[in-house]
Image (cartoon, rainbow, N blue to C red; front, side, top):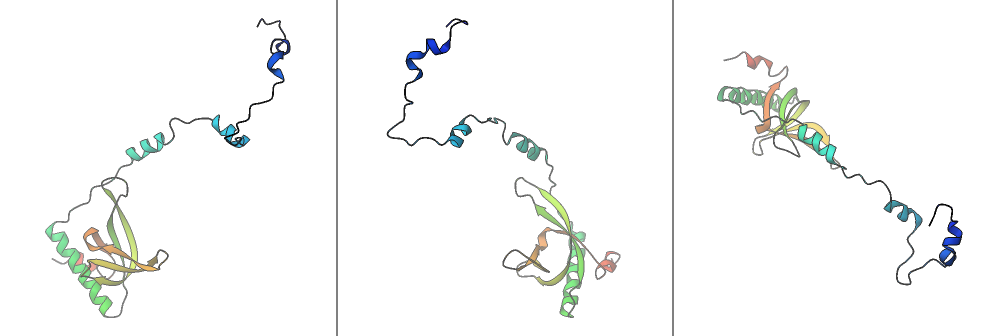
Length: 158
């Protein structure tokens, strides 16, 4: 077709034919047809993956014998206070494992203690969480340190 030719004349033989409609398949709705030609993002999720890879996690610190003994004395003091009817508020530094990669992070949790379960090696806090309203717990093995008015005097004792 040359630039001066009228397309209505050149394609006149096919211009007014009916559009083919399949007898076996339903006609595709216009929004679905438009979706076929929408922009395609070949890098979808790539930048999220890069951000995740750059995110830094910490390794869990292993307590030495002295630190472990001090932690045990602090937990014992908290247990004695609970037996006396108190629910002491303390600040725990706890290692929280990362859900996606090795390592994790240390977080500080300030909460009053409901009880210490030595059989399960858990500390039960007064805070309830989740739909079931279960008390929040901390794994004793993941605790790095404990601070609070009830335990602070133990740091200076030998």
